[in-house]
Image 1 (cartoon, rainbow, N blue to C red):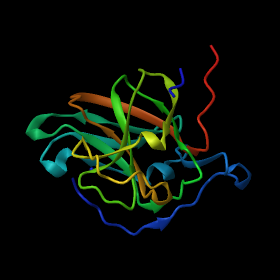
Image 2 (spheres, rainbow, N blue to C red; image 1 turned 60 degrees about the horizontal axis):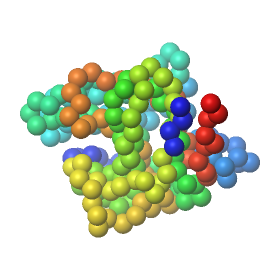
Image 3 (spheres, one colour; image 1 turned 180 degrees about the vertical axis):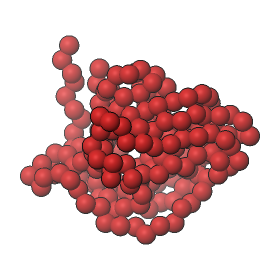
Length: 200
């Protein structure tokens, strides 16, 4: 069925190069395609160890060409989250309406994070999603659904998401979901309109 972070790491902001043909760029733009391990190396983990926790989130490139975000979430030492994010790059996504991703999960809940030029202490613009065990699904996230959060709390006075200045994308597991987890991502795209509903 198709469904309609506590540290700051300072790094050079680089221009982002699309892998999408220019003729299709008005409809969609591939931000990440994880067929090759080189794309996975553009991401890195940040776990609750930055706050004293002991959760262990990792990345690997799968044999079928996906990024695998996996590990174990622990609630010890006031921890409880694991995350990964892409290395900083400037992405102007203002011509698009949202992000479409193809994922295979484990039945747990995750979040897609977007970081912009507006810095949020221990947070980002976030949209949560559920997964189905061992099933590939495509999920669409309208930019209008992303909410600014800090330490997991919504920031009502934060500005709206600035899609002209997307600096990084990320994946997060939290919400006291202790135990092992695994999420595969085949690709991430910016799209100009929602995908058509799947036919029954």
